[in-house]
Amino acid sequence: MNLKSLASTLGMSKTTVSRALNGYPEVNALTRERVLAAAKAAGYQPNPMARSLAVGRTNMFGIIYPLLPNDLGDPMFMNVMRGMSGMLEQSQRSLIIAPVSVANELGAYEQMVRGRRVDGMLVSRTLVHDARIAYLVRKGFPFVAYGRTELKQPYAWFDYDNEAGMRRACALMLAHGHQRIAMISAALEFNFAAQRRRSFLSCMADAGLAVDPALLADNALDRRSGYQAMQHLLARTPRPTAVIVDNHLSGVGAVRALLDGGIDIGREISVIVWGNIEDSLVGLDVTTIDQQDTDLAGARMGEMLTAVAGGTAPATLQVLWQPVLLPGQTVGRCPR
Image: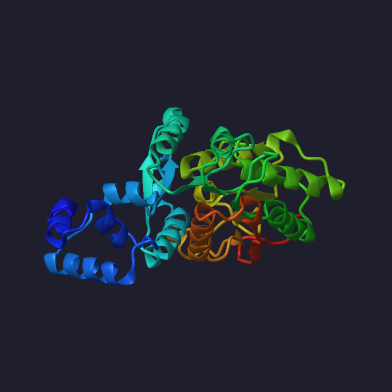
């Protein structure tokens, strides 16, 4: 049975029946009860597209994601998505992930906004200068950024304190006597990578230590590039006594390169990785800068999306979580 047939059976207009089904306040309680009872008895199911047009919302949120080879195997990313979708499901909302090519990413945002296909969006892997966020702010479209960007206008964001986390990592290395410390980073166009690199250089300068440019590797955001970056560092003379890796994906490759190279990690070379190292390195307790409960972070961002789509001012939806340093077996005294 469709809306027209239901209205005919009740002897009402389609407009009245539609408004009763969608909870409009101008429909009196008796009429609404009669319509809902008839719809239930007839097994009527509203057309979701028509319902969206009628109420002005889809009850769906989206994330446009230019998927890299390791993304679907990244437990931290999947945990965030699980936490967010679980939270949204509790309020009968859905999360959709739309994979796109990097070249078509901004175009996909424009299509999503023009078609009002979702009520709000999550923007991930924010850039230092992010055209996606600038576009959404300009259009007044609800969104939450998973990370920050250099934009003067207020917008909703959830991020980790990248500077503080890197200071904790540097402080631990320095406390163990390390001075020749290397850093492996993701591409510095990503805001998190730029902030973590800047904090690293600041910490070293505060300690009165010059950083050898040859010990700064970037563009490492997967296992292969992390592995290659660590191999490059091991080939230096003298090689670093400590390495900080700014993301867990390349961290897996970096630690694997040390193991394959026969390095006694924590004695010959110390390592700290930002983010949880997955189960591929069972038996090695890696010292990490931990982002805490990623499921909970996803749920928090789901709450923020719901709020901003409901009209909450974006400037009031800015959350900075503090990462914690979890000691492991991979940091030790600087070898003489």
